[in-house]
Image (cartoon, rainbow, N blue to C red):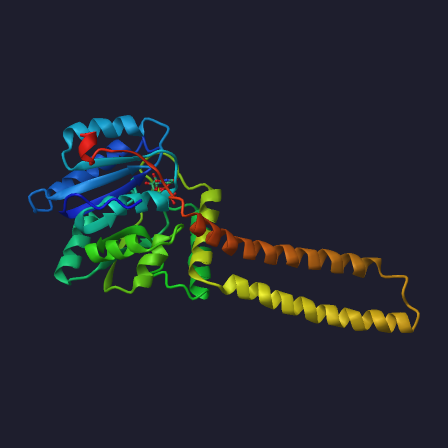
Length: 321
Ligand code: UDP
Ligand code: MG
């Protein structure tokens, strides 16, 4: 799945895009001057991973390719999701430094210059960009984001700086360490801090999406949350064990109650308690099965070893030129 980078550059910028026809021209207009102005003889590449867009995104990208020599477009056959799209970009990025950034201009491209500066000056492997202010996010997004980071912290998962999403700079060594991981549904904002490489944090104001709508519906957010939890911790499995213990204790109490009831001849009334026990036990059992199922599913997909994305076309491959 991993194609080794075929040319090295000073900086790669990896951009996952999915149905971003509205925002793409604005993004290019803001990103290009930043990169052209970095003062390294334009020795950079921009790796846009088109995550199976069905709107005019591929057409717009083809047009950009003609006038922007540093642009490389990798098109995935089908929508593989944000994290898989970034992974596809990281597997192909040849930069000594690699920045990942969203296309919707919520992450300001101008910060890339500062990230590169800090990384070079302090010889760091990772520079996280954290959102100092989320007031431009919807209330729902803010509440769910808080819940997410709080849960991850409680589970003991090192998620790096809070509210650092996928806007970050990584050194070549970091990217290679990430690419070498066999994990399939990796959540990069957890994987990168877990490496423990020297890092710094820059904070920025998160802007509103410049155009278009969020490509992260609730189902995708939920998937990311489940992947994050199962990828970072076995705590839910332990919770299942404790629920089992608790259930056994309650059962023991009820057994004594039933035996005493039988001995004193109080056995007929009890529809409510029977009903409650059956539904509660059933519910807890299903919950525990579901928790185990998530881990079994992860093991299963690892066993199948199917790629998480398929590349349809890569403008950087020699035969595609
Ligand atoms: N994205 C992607 N594949 C997806 C969903 C999103 O490549 O299945 C891209 C999207 O085009 C954007 C980035 O991932 O560049 C973040 O998505 P979005 O801004 O919609 O997420 P939000 O900021 O609402 O969480
Ligand atoms: Mg966004």
